[in-house]
Amino acid sequence: MTAAQINAVKKINQGPRTSLGETIEAPAGAVAPDHPDNTVLGYAYDGGYMSSAGIPARKIGTSPTTPPGDFGQGASQIGFAWLSPPNLSFNILGFNFDTDTDQLLASSPVATNSDSLDISKFVKHNGKIIWYHGLSDPGPPVLGTINYYNELAAQNGGFQGAAKFSRFYPIPNMGHCAGGPATDQFDMLTPLVHWVENGTAPGPIVASGTHFTSAPTTRSRPLCPYPQQARFIGGSGGDLSVASNYTCVMPPGL
Image 1 (cartoon, rainbow, N blue to C red):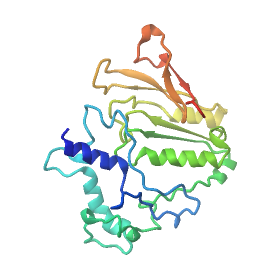
Image 2 (cartoon, one colour):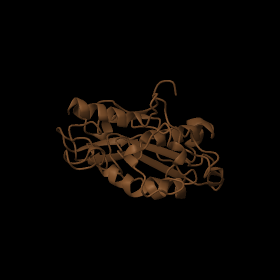
Image 3 (spheres, rainbow, N blue to C red):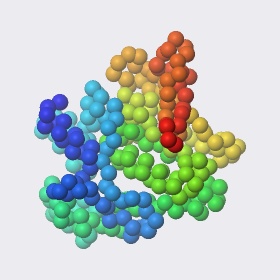
Image 4 (cartoon, one colour):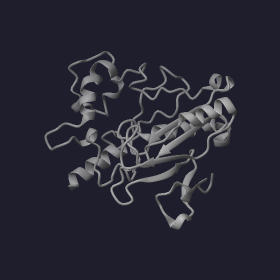
């Protein structure tokens, strides 16, 4: 990567800023009054996103003359779906984070962080939910999902309280729904069914993957329910590619 490319990735990862370096707030609230912190977040550094496999084409394109996929999405949506009033001739490359954020459509969840933290009716109905999100997702930043779950837990007795009805699984190195040097093959549906029908709350979920850029190219790992993290405990000859050689632990201080 060139210095210019590295600087561009750093800017993408930090999220949008004003000319003074201040963070941006999305116009959340019109859809969901009880919304999480609406600071527009960037991307967490993750080994998959910055691996030798390359930065996702939707961020930098496939060649020096090919526009990124995200540009195509933005060019076709922002003018009529994200602005109020719609402006099909709006120059998205000229969007000014100092002056133009008030043009964003406040009532559209497409353009805002308007997910409600109040899911009390769902919880009272004995609902169960499992989220997962790739830590290298080049689309919706995982930081938003982490932020939502943290604030949801704070309203429901902390992580132990939130775990009574929800589980969130961050997937290391995984891209958008799949892909990357990651254990991106897993089954979330069966644990959810067992939870709903049998009352068996899900714990670690074993996942596998074959897209690793160094040997062994096929690996398995346990996916840990947030905020637990996988830790290597040895065994089976110290093989780093075997899920049974890991356990899920709470990080210090939680």
